[in-house]
Amino acid sequence: MSETESAEDHIYPCVCKFCEKIENMRLAIPGDQSHSCVKADRRDEHCRDIATLIMSCPKRVTLLVGPDKVRIKCHKALLGFKSEYFDAICFGGFSTAESKEIEVQEEDPKAIQAFVAWLYSAQILPTACPLSDLWLLGDRIRSPEFMNEVMHTIFERIEKERIEASEYKQMFIATSPDSKLRQLFRNTILQEGPLGVDNDYSDDFMEAWKDLMKQGGELVVDIALRGSLFTIGTCTEHRWKSHNKYLEPIEAFTTRPIEDFIAGKPRAGTR
Ligand SMILES: [Zn+2]
Ligand SMILES: [Zn+2]
Image (cartoon, rainbow, N blue to C red):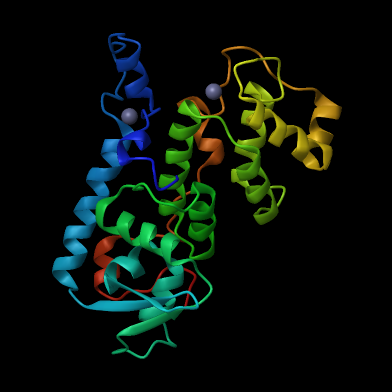
């Protein structure tokens, strides 16, 4: 998001099953158990974890991020519980138990700030960092829950805004063909344009897409083989029924009960 946009421009409609029902002013189907917004449920659960972790383990560390070593403070337990990478650094065999500073040279301070903000708030707050970059950060620091929250924010954003050619290109360079992020972007574009016939796009928007397509690549190959899937009003890739395809599994391997974490028990299969 650019500096001139306000946070309010970035309030996206939740696209969970419950919110879709509310939006459509339909009554809940009798016998349907999903009577709450899954986004709100995720937030409640996350906030309960945070309270427990901070109360039982109040130590903080300072992350020194990027080449300029931007200082970002955070509770150690939050970093470790929600990221396998930080767990190894903060609590793993190689950690010096009392180290109060951790260097994270390779990462963008804006992205780490967004991650830390999510740790404390359970929300992806407006940031100058593209959502794709946040998802990729989550992959590197092995935080499937962060990846999924970013992915949900991407679902919500795609509901409201078109994918820009520049964003697609940036995402493409940083991902492998089987990446869930790349699949979502590609499927969404194949389903709802800008490769279909529609004329409410700005000239700049279309020119950027034409330039990108002239460069060829996977997207163009897909269109040549399958044709655009474009059909007006039927984009389903960011609707709740498709969500699981693009989410990371939250397994015992990557997470563990909070009591085990606090008691210092290692993750299954690590250390
Ligand atoms: Zn919802
Ligand atoms: Zn759509």
